[in-house]
Length: 171
Length: 163
Image 1 (cartoon, each protein chain N blue to C red):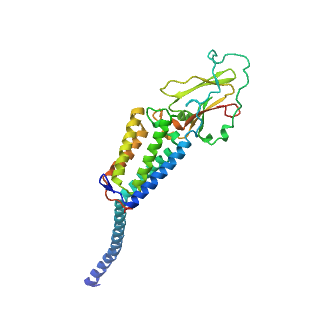
Image 2: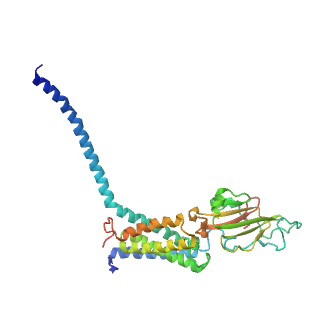
């Protein structure tokens, strides 16, 4: 068989057919797993723990808040992506700043918890999310190789995690 | 001592000198032969090595785009990173990359496959440049594009699947 002046023999055609079928099978697997992966919090519109009260000013004294409606999750250190977690608040290291390339993350204390706004640089920031038990904010960056020149070309491997003081994931 | 004996003694060291020089020349010749053989092997196998290397790059990206498309949707222009359209486009892109990788590694319709790979890389480079400017990532892809372009005109390939 000839295509555009190039000949493809029987064995070559068979190998390409096998590769095509293998690619389709891998693609079906990938499609079924498309919702799995890194935590899709903040950056991709994850479910907020609670909406930030519009009238609440950072640091305002509002009396004791009701207990968090959601129990804290597992410890971040026990997660498979813990190795890719970089603490950005409070006190971000230089590695954390590099991991947060292309992202805008704003954290402020609000009463006993923290309020977090996170989004992609150059795009409108989503509304703040309030975490009553939040104490630390981490950026998950699986690969620094997709960050260059102040831009992150693969936000699909990025995520945001908020933990309580004990390191348990609250979002 | 006669003059003829002296001349013979004078000649003797020169003959002894000649032996190491011959050995050195022989060593140089052998080294030259080895270098020549290495140069010959490199010239013969370099196009094949380039072909396999380019195929491995395409295979790596194709495989990962197929098994974890959600990590690559950020590259899809004009589509949300969580949209099904973006995932489907990444899967299609990964499938093309995987088939191209197999064709290039096996040397099946190599110049055509390399040309298609070059077109894909041009599209990627333009997309990256438009969205983020000329960065080190973009330049890295320019290098891979150069390799693909070089293979589009390459005819001296070894270890090619025929038949």
